[in-house]
Figure (cartoon, one colour):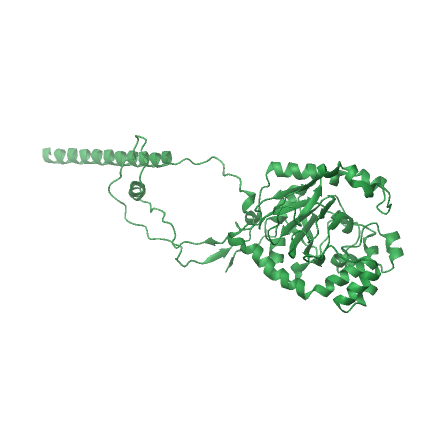
Length: 443
């Protein structure tokens, strides 16, 4: 019996010792974990993503192969409490001692599958409050490095596709100029060469043009389609217009020929569009650096909110208010520009903001710029918009209130959308924000 009692007592002491060891190891592990947490400062809220990295941050994500868990280490090194920064090797030992595997940086040379993510979070970009206020107050703003990518690959890709496109479609651009000047599609169709178009324009007393324009290149060029729909631009447009949903209206390539094309006159884009809305916005993207006092856009502050100008005055009145806008808005002091512009910089303006550009004689080089225009997805088509398609200039002038500059852009779809319908669906003017959900695709 005495022998059994002694063995029972020994077992009890062994159990007590085991429990004490478990408590000691657990407390050491907790201290180690607390020490690791104390070694890093984790922000309570993730910082806002900077708008200056718009297009480039749609980067591909990599899936790292799982590593085999290593056996648990016996020793757990204590975390220094004397203020000394813990070394990487010590941290790794602590992590291994807790039964975890240290995170190793993936080698650049390692072959891993690239996944292209096309989710809503990848296209959300917060516009700084100062920029939103400037746009709301003045009707224009600049977004520096908005489309900046490594080595400007995105801008280069746009240019590599758009410049040859402009060369192939030059005759169509000249026909568009003839149609606008004559207000007749029939007259434009009779021009079979660039020389014939230029001759017809001279007959209409037009010696030179400010630029050649190419509409909706996104239908032919993948790079333009991607930037109009899958970049951050739709979300930025939604924020600046303060709307829930955004529709792509059009894109336009503007080509100013060196030493030939004159200045772009003052105008507002919304007068040329078929929508009845105040929520229209254009992103102007230079495809090359623009020097100071070059061919970038000039803007008139607060002209987008001058409701009295079109209400009380007629643009056709040669001696009227439209002929002295410099006086109306305070002279050169009200005119702003954001030049010089680097690759990736983008200017943005409201559809009702008056803007212009200098002639190509300033820079002495061909200038290419892509303009992308969005509208509030709830915007309705004006009942008179289809009348701008009429070939008779007198009827078109009396029935349509807007200008006919964009007629080539909306002609393919305008008659298929009932006026005063909101919202409406059409593939040629798609709703691009919020984006449609799509699953990741392996590249």
